[in-house]
Image 1 (cartoon, helix red, strand yellow):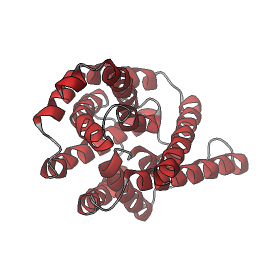
Image 2 (image 1 turned 90 degrees about the vertical axis):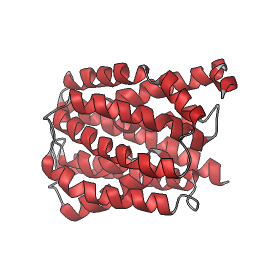
Image 3 (image 1 turned 30 degrees about the horizontal axis):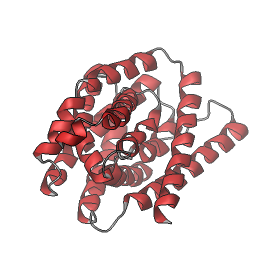
Length: 256
C-alpha cells in the first residue's frame, strides 16, 4: 500500500474520482458519481477501489444530509428504504457469485430504456409530464438500488429510474437522495467489514483522500441550488444517458 500512496497515477485517478462522486452526492450530475470505482480501478483492483471509496462516501453522505437538512420527501423514503435493505442483503449473500461486469451491464440497459422512455413521454405529453408515486415500483427500484449499490456503488441509476419521473423540486429530490444513500451506505459498512475489506491499507488510502469529500459535496449542492427545474431535469437525464452507455460498454467488455 505504501507503494500505491507513492504512485502519482493513484492520485491522478483517485482525486478526480472523489471530486466527481462528491459533486454527485451534493446533487449535481445525478448518477455521474458511478465513475468513482471505475476511475480508481485504473490503478488497483475494483474490489479494493470500492472498499477505499466507501468510508469517503459515508463522509460525503454526512455532509450532503447536513447540506439538505429538512428538505426531503418522506413518502419516497418510506416506500424505497425497505427494498434497499433487502437489496443490500441480497448483495451480501451473492457477493461471491455476481460479477461487477454483469451488474454494470444490467444497470446500463435499464438506464438506457429509462432515458428512451422519458424522451418518448416528453414528446407525447410535454416537458412538464410527471408520474404519480407508486409504492410497489418504489419497493422494486429500492431493492435494485440497494443491490447494485452494494456490489459496485452503482445505486444512483436505479434510484433515479423511480425518482426522476415524479419530478420533485430539485432541492427536495437532492435531499431525499442524500438521506436514502446515507442510510444505504451506512448499512453497507457491516457486510463490507465482514468480508474483510476494511484492512489498515485500505483505510489509510481512504484517510488520504478524505479531505476532498466535504468540499466537493458542498460544491455540488451549491450548483443544484442555483439550477431551475427546466435546466436540472434535462441535464440529469443527459448524465444518466452517458452513465448508461459507459456502464453498457464496461459490462460488455468485462464479459467478453
